[in-house]
Length: 285
Image 1 (cartoon, rainbow, N blue to C red):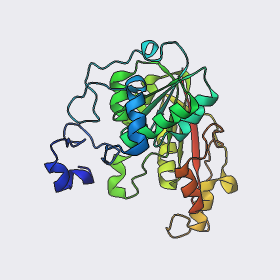
Image 2: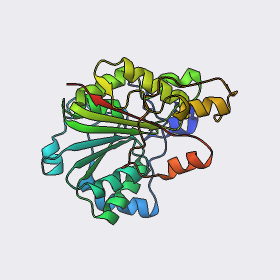
Image 3: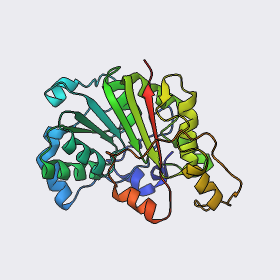
Image 4: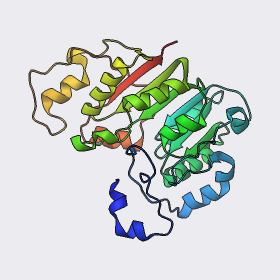
């Protein structure tokens, strides 16, 4: 159970529905408040009906009922390449990407309503027409709402690393989740990931290298002395004991994705001395 499920005040809330009570595996997110105030509340009122997709729920308030298939052409009122961002946060990345790429459709998947309300502010400010958003658990969106071979790209930037070993089972990137991504991505489509946590980066790389549906776009790239992993381990940048003899011989890291703007979250990570790991994989034909 998530930490919030142990909160007596949450349990006594008549609107409370724990996100894990009706699922077969732990969710990758911690339940946070959905109340909106001020500018966010007003932006939601003005824009939610048009830009927020509200699926029928199964039981939990981030779940998706089994019959909630999404008609993309109807949803966006056109046919266009589809980019899906999972874990949109405050919408900084997807809004700026959509502004610079009006020829593509952008779908935000996020469980945190205040974050989606912040995205609505950006949709208004930029005058965007090519963004839609879903407040739901990402694996269920991939399983139920999106069709096979429907996405040109899927972006997952800075998903929760769940640092403690006993919590690694909560990490979003696992083999079963990559199966879902592979079903949705078109052959030749791209999965892009980024994290500021080296252990999670290694796990992502290991899982993707082992998955039969994906091929690394940058095999061997940034290996050895050029690897951020080498620097993190040698210098003990993540508060673990340093290993001066460590070297990342494998590499395979992608250059920073040029369309991933520097968000407030990434900026804080860099300011704290953390290093960033990018990965990019192609969905094999």
